[in-house]
Length: 353
Image (cartoon, rainbow, N blue to C red; front, top):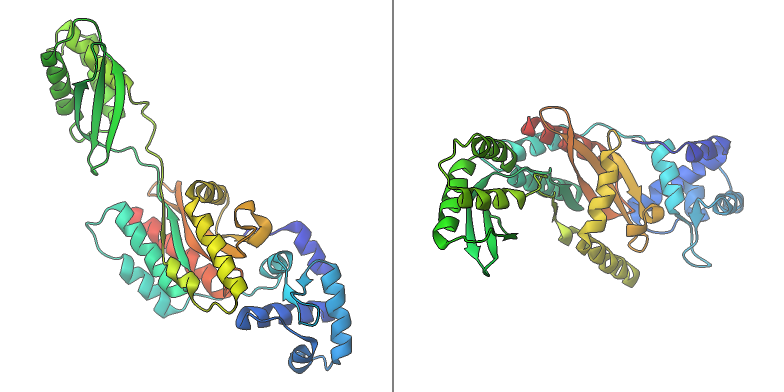
């Protein structure tokens, strides 16, 4: 996990009594979801402090921005900054339970599935074990083309129809050379389809360009120009990654107030804006190990009271190719979910290897 030096410095400035009370407030809140009062803390604390003494410490912690009071007469809750301080400096992350390890490994075991199916299974398992929503950003893929054809749309233009091996169909418009005929388009489409079969576009483009350049291709000049136009429609860049989310219904569990419903409504709206979420997860790819985004630390989730726990996963070349993890309320069992996300990411990496 990435540590925040400023938060670590703040933790070091707190005395033992403040640190213990702060830790008890956060742990109690994460366990119950309720504001924590001084009377409750006086019963939990091994320091034998009176409620009045504890209230003074709580006031100091609130002035530091680590606690907040939802209502004037209520107890205190950890702020997003307080949760970050706790996660960075006080959280004791244990090992993943052996039963959970086996569950993740068994769900991801097996062959014959596509990468996307395997990743979907991984986040479904994560969602079930964590009771959060699971999410994954898939690797960028340089797809393989299955078929290509040209359909004239005007005397000077044609629609290029690209059919990928996963069923995706893309259409692009090209400008045609003067004098083309329907047979020219058919010949160009048949030639490209034969050359593209089972190859990535980049691979096929090199072969085709060389054949045309050395005049080894059995194409007349007009057809060769159409083939060139078809090749030029594709930049060769990998197809964009996608975001898969499973288990959103888990976010509707254990709602305790109207405020919780409003939080989840905002969260669902955030999840619909996948472009912003993918950008957030792109940031996670630049770090090592598990990354945690808490509430207002990210503009994307500032209204939803949510935390994101993610880890990058690698391919066989040990290159980071995507991010996997969970999203849920800020009141998460961080100690349990952090190793769960970390183990799942490593298991997925072995699967891709």
